Amino acid sequence: MEITFLSSPSPIHHRLYLGHNEARFFAGSSSTLLCSHRSATTFKHPILWTSHKAPQCSMLGISKKLENVSWLFDSTKFLVQNKFPRDVVVRSELTAAGSAEDGYLLPELKVESKVRGACFYVVTAFSAIFLFVLMLAGHPLVLLFDRHRRKFHHFVAKVWAALTVAPFFKIEFEGMENLPPPDTPAVYVSNHQSFLDIYTLLTLGRSFKFISKTGIFLFPIIGWAMFLLGVIPLKRMDSRSQLDCLKRCMDLIKKGASVFFFPEGTRSKDGKLGTFKKGAFSVAAKTNAPLVPITLIGTGQIMPAGKEGIVNVGSVKVVIHKPIIGKESDMLCEEARKAIASVLTQS
Image 1 (cartoon, rainbow, N blue to C red):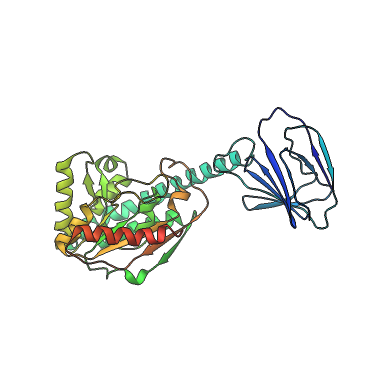
Image 2: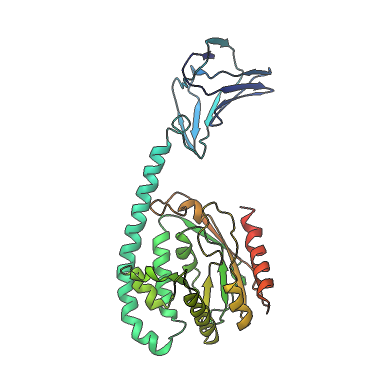
């Protein structure tokens, strides 16, 4: 085995740590080489690594054999010869920044995510077109017999969401026993990370009313379906609209329907739990309806906020917490936030 240091204009320092039973090579914190060695030496020089064997190279979970694996970096010329008693394992770990030096597979991964994103919207659009016709055909009967809950429409929405997400990611549910009976009106709250949160929550099969910006209702098919579902419109910067929204939520609960809130108000871009607004908890306190906290894990990694054109590979976990009942909105807010954060911080 031969390790050669060559000169290059790159200003980055790369270090080779040779410790007990292993050597680690750091290329600006992006790459790591592990091999067998029993000495302790530190080099602050990048390297050209040449292996006469065919080591296993694993990058982002993809393994393949490479002949003459080489990395060319800077510094002065050195020659270190050593015989290693075991096989060499080469492992490259990409940093989140994805610079040109540490991620040569990153462009391909972005292309793959964009292709998956395009396929996602094709699937959801075609599914929506056919299912919207079914929803529209049944709407007169829904208004006649089930104006407030609209369980038929929510069943169609569940089928639409399930058909859309099935080819792209799996959903794991935990705590399903904590869901109130389908006919029990309740206030549901959840953390908000992604556009995929709505799809994920619809697969629960509960007839709750979401709150959405008024502009979304103008979207063809999707916006029209939201109108048929009885989704509650909201103008975010309009205090009068906010008050009307809360009054409508309380009226729906009194009539046997459930409502759903994202108390953060917007999607989190870093996955951390934001500040909760009090509207949902005020509704639960005044109506004495059970408050059901839900934690969503993984949606933000699959489709990050602000990057709705991509769908990464991943899975989603939905954790339903035990219902909370109380007449003080501050207490409900604090307890719900604790429940959601307790699982979110462990993921």
